Amino acid sequence: MPERDAPQSQGTPVPPAAPEAPAPAAAPEQKIHMLDARSLRGLAHPLRMSLLRALRDYGPATASQLADRLGESSGATSYHLRQLATYGFVEDAPEHGKGRERWWRAAHDGTYTDGSLADNPDPAVRGAVDLLVHEIANSHTRELATWLGTSRDWPDEWRLNTQLSDYTVRLTPQQAAELGHRMTALIESYRLPGDEGVEGSAKYRVHVHGFPITKD
Image (cartoon, rainbow, N blue to C red; front, side):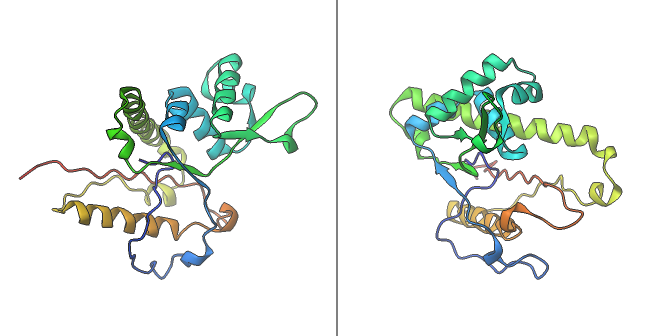
């Protein structure tokens, strides 16, 4: 269950990228933080997840800047940034600071858990997993709603090249895992060194939801 919108695939053969895609070798190494029971409980809070997402999306910022962006008090953002730092999710960005101003940056490009924490014997851990995945789902819903509400502010070339689709296929659990790994590999093949992109590009969010709907 990725906080970065696309989990790392491990050990599954993948098809070559489409001809127009950058070669997979061009993608930079991603710093991914694997959640354990302790770090999960440190992250599983709606505001902390929003702070971490904002730092990943928009780069280093101060507690006051994040408070303005998220509509929170600077006292709340400052406290939760310190908590995120305690668990290793954020770190100081001293190169941006001036005087006593404290800047923060994300310590990793993404977070990942393989789902085994959902079966942890500790009910507090299972509760943190539930909060985490529901907040991710809520975040996806908010982002989609924002796009739908602002899409007319974008040029036609963007509005006509977005996706809002769903597909139903019959798979085994093993095939579902393979599908997820292949989609992840394809998406990662478009990532360029330094996240530079090309002229006319924009940050493009991809949400991936896959789940069974019948047991027959």
